[in-house]
Image (tube, rainbow, N blue to C red; front, side):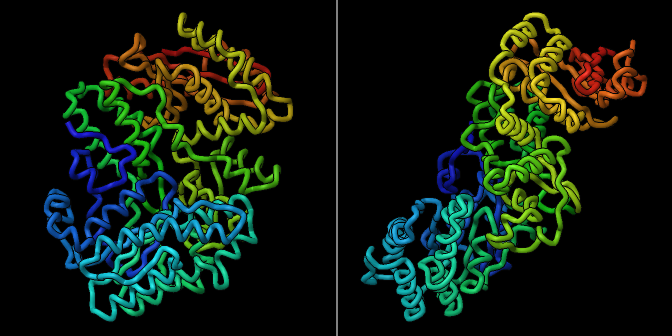
Length: 569
C-alpha cells in the first residue's frame, strides 16, 4: 500500500518513501523548447512538486540516482540529452515576508534567498570551491560571482528554478500598496537587479535554463524592461495539462487506491462522480475539450478517504486550500463593482471576457480595471474558460464557496435558525418540508427588490450550499451531473457507510417570476416535459447503480409567492 502524498512537495521523498505519483514527466521533454519559461497556475495546483521534479532531473549531483528516481517514469524511459547536466539553484519567493519598508523587504529577500544560495554553494563545492561569498552580499551580487566563476572555469551551467516568483509582490498588489510595488519593479530595485543578473548569465551562457512559477503575470510584465527574455508559456497548448490531473490520470489514480486498499470496486463510479463534481472543471484554454482536476484537492480527498477506511470524508475540501474569494473585494474595490461581479457569478455563473486579454500579459494597473476582472479571476483560479466568450465557476466546490461569500457580503444568516429543520429531515426524510424551511428561513431574508435577480441557478446553488453545510456527514450533494439524457439540476446521495446508503434524490428546479405565480401554484401535477426530464436522469442513474432507491422530484419556485414540490417517481 503506497502512501497518498498530500502536502508532500518533494519528488525525492515521493519516489524514495513509497508515495503514489501521477507521472507528468513527459512534459520535461516538451518544456526544453524554452530557455526561460514562466508557467502560471492558481495556488495549490502542484507547482512546487513540479519544481522539485525538474530539480531532481537536471541536477548533476543526482546522476547516480537517476534510475531510482526516474526509472519507472516516462522520462526515465525517454531521457533527454540534458538530464543531470546542470548545477540547479532552486529559489522560493513565498518565504519573503512583506513590510511597508522596502529596505526590510530587501533584507528579508537577502536572508531567505541567500540561505538557498549558501545551500547551493555547499552542494556544488566540488565544482565551485570557495568563492568568498558572504551572507551580507546582495543576492544579485552573490549570483553574479557564481555565473562569472562558471564562465571563467567552463563549469556545468546553472538551471535556475524560481517557485512562487510573485508571492510577495502580489501581497503589495492586493493591499494596493502601489508606491512600494512600483519601487520594487522599476528603477534599480534589488528585485530588478536580481533579474538583470539572470539575464546577463543567460547571455554569458553560464545560466543554461530558467523555470519560473507563480500565479499572476503582473510582476513579470512590470519587470519586462529588465527581464525581457522570459516567455510566458502558461497558455501553450502543449503544456496545458502539465499541472493538474486529467480525467484519465484521476481514474487510474483512484483505481490504484481501490485495488491497493481492497475497497469494493462497485463503489468506484460513485467516488469518481463525487470527485468530478467537486474537483474537476478547470479549462485553461477555451479550445481544449478536456477539463482538469485540481491535483492538490484530489490528493487531500484520497488521503482522507484512505485514512477513513473507505468512508467518504465529511468535508470534501481542506479549509487551508479553499480559494480566498475575498480577493474579489480587493480586486473590485468599489461595492458596486463587487456586487456586479458576485451577481454575475452567483446568479448567472457567466462572465464575458476578451480572449486577447487572456493570452496577453497585463500589468498591475490593468489588473484592477473592470474589463480585466474575468482574466484576473482566471489566473487566481476562481473562474475557468467555458468557451471562447465566457468564463464560469469550474465546479461545485467553487460554487459553494461563492454562495457562502455572497451570504457573508449581504449578511444573510446561514448559521442560526436551521437546526430544527435539518434534525427533522434526518428523522423523517421529508425533503419537501426541508425545502419549505429553506424557502421560509433563508429566502425569506431577501428584500423584495432582491427577487428581481433571483433565478433557478441561484435557488439550487443556495439550497445546495445550505444542505452541504448541515448534512454532509450523511449525504453528498451535486449539481449539473452529466447523463446521456441531459444534465441534472440538483442531487443528494446517501453516503454508503451511513443508514442512507444507496439512496438518491434528483430535483429538477424550475423558476418563474412572481407575476406568473398563479399558474404555477395552481398546478396539481408537474408539466409532462419536466417530469419526463427528471425521470430520464433517474433511468440513467439506474443503469450504473441498479440497486439505488431513487426519488425524482420537480420543484417549481414562483418568486417570493411560494413553490410547488412534486415527487414523480
